[in-house]
Image 1 (cartoon, rainbow, N blue to C red):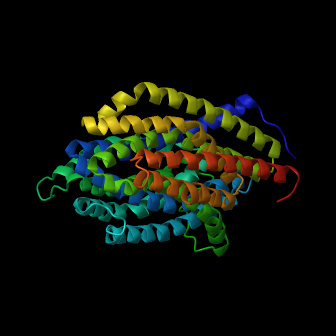
Image 2: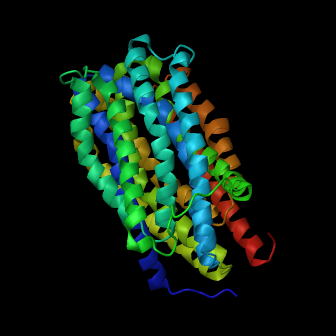
Length: 450
């Protein structure tokens, strides 16, 4: 039976999840921010090499961890349906998948430098970009395992431990980066590529801390992990993978279009790449706001989906879009008034500043569409509808946005702005189609059509 929910209660529950997740996302995005700033202080070439390497590493990492994100809606639905006995099994099976995906992602990153010439990456960036990828590849298994345990913790309504670990790790990255960038004793100076080694070490450390906490904390007494060894369960492996693979691909399609933009503009030179990387880094930090809201919506919508409470589920969705709109407007105002000093914090090269200043204006344009599309995707994941969004993101970003960006950048003399115009076009299409999909999915559930 569908029962409406109290608006004040839902606001409290949504923010209770969103705020710790947001802090976690800011902290984890801060890893990339620290890498970018510290590499930028070395040289434009170091910053450009990091930009190219991150453009390869980020999509691979997010594809692998995105598949594991199916753990959240499945646990949320089990919780809503009062089937707690399934929660531990779901998480253990997600950990099995995480091991396989982590190893596969690591191997892919080790192979990617072989394709630098095919991707037309400038030769002067090859060595540092390759060293970064080889180093950070060892952190991929830690990231996938950490993602599974994070989804377990957050879906049960305990996101704060992940937040605490991320906040503690953030300041540790600075001396680690410095150590491997500049060298000490037997550790050679690696320049910007040293960030890859530092990040891999940090990811494994975060994983071990989270495992220890989950084994000992009283908050997880009812659904305690690691009490016994669970073999592979083909039912849940298939369920997680069938739900998670489209999630991973959808995130891959979206994020990779932003990340590979650095590859599209790489022939334009170090200065343009550095400016683009600064603009992308700024907007990536701010994207954590709607993305965190989407993760919270997945959990809240997933709980009502499991309980088959369609009215309350739609109320949560409407509330989510209101919150997304408010945050997007605040972000637009913030970017407009603060873009100058933010860019200066990254780099003091006047050529880099002038290009980045113009690119941030394009980021302001797409904030609303970006917030709405990611909120819609989060709601759909909570309703375990993932295949439709996967195809939507493929069409919007790679069938439309990517060719538009390549044409405008390399053939129509728009320089780096061409890529950003392509991104705006893709986001408009994705937003329109995802909201339409959400409306149709809600209608099917309300009328009893699965």
